[in-house]
Image (cartoon, rainbow, N blue to C red; front, top):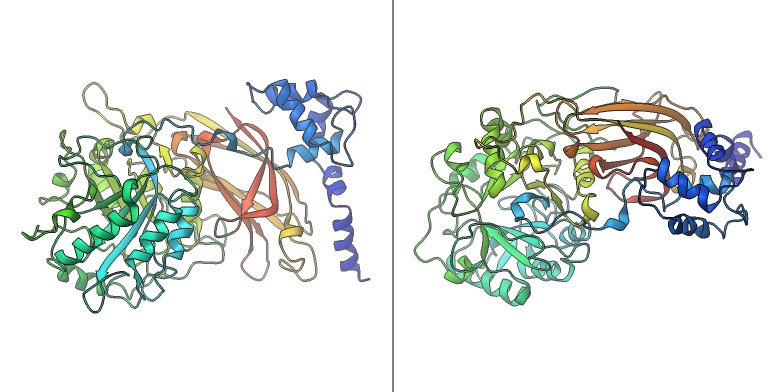
Length: 590
């Protein structure tokens, strides 16, 4: 047996004992503090849950259940937990950073405009925006992950007698609309019982609009939400719309009327592709268009001019609009004439949806940030990727969220740091796809004043994150994945995605030749807007000659983090959770 094979086998055979032997002194000290004669009883554990884990409502029965759940282990002691069993509990699946038992626990009785909503962009595309296949598969995948807004671009087929879904005037291959609708019906409420919104980008003639109306009503039946004949003065609540399908589009228009100029303009930009993403995805922009750089792996996701969304421009209503199609529209969309000021006017007797590209929103926010916040208190704002993101990359979602935008539309078929941030936000509220907006985005002062996204705010709280150690790579990666001749050299990047004042990343030292690294490093993050902050964690393996390898990531909503020592599961680049890879982390607020 070679020296290297011996080292790997030794690490494998002694894997958990080695982890206990190398456990940080703080973990051992806590065990000694909350145990007697090397044994942690039910009562000891109960006190530990309250005092260290900050689970103030923890009961003795919960502590007994934890002990009972570890009885099958060979390391279990009949009187309670020894150090190894205690360590197994800390690193176990029943000690997550978010309380999964809460489910959807936000107030779900407010209007839809009071929530961030998990939103997809061009939901039917399997890959890039120019030449990938259109399919119902990415729609199904998105719904299974809790996405609540599905976008479909609908066009006549070549014979002009049926309706297809495709990215218009590209090389994407179409999929039948009816197939997409049936898949939405089958999978809409797999991950969440709260409503699904279908946003339609309509390029149809009135006769095909009538056909779409029949398809939609026959497919969804009683689950389809009709707003009634009058305009909505306020959007219904997610609670009242459970297991309902909602249609959102602009009022019908003639096929391609007033659109050809915009299409020609967008076509001229579509060749300017953003560069491919790196192995783990590029670093997201801060809100000034700059890239924070702290090591050799920080790259941009693309920085080109925005294009107008061809489906959201001003349109004239034709006289022969199919009335049954117009009746489907529960959330009307479109841009009023008269410029941005007119778009952002709030009508006390009517609510609507407005769409802006990421670049349009950034430009508008420079001079009209407070007006955007005021608009989103009653109305819905959808933000979409600029059209030259032909590789289906994404942007910094915080630009939308900090202005109250409900539908921050993302390309869900790829991966990267922006998408990890999106996934992190919607791990909140039980992953149901709706996250209640913070009160400061919803309330107005006595003189009508609203939150100013540009205001310099004081620190509200400080998040302390101590990264103890990690384990599980040996099981989820091939043993030569990181290095053919030695164990990996891991380091952790930890930081905040949030408003500009709160955003930043830090990293641990690199530990050489260790499958079970113990960093034992603490970081502090002062937060001015903790309600919008997301904790970002990434693990990389240092490579002296090439780009560092990816070793896992997660992103977690700060406002739902559980204090105490937690086992934080890591995910792959696409957001799928690894079977074994975890970090042991301590979270505290000061």
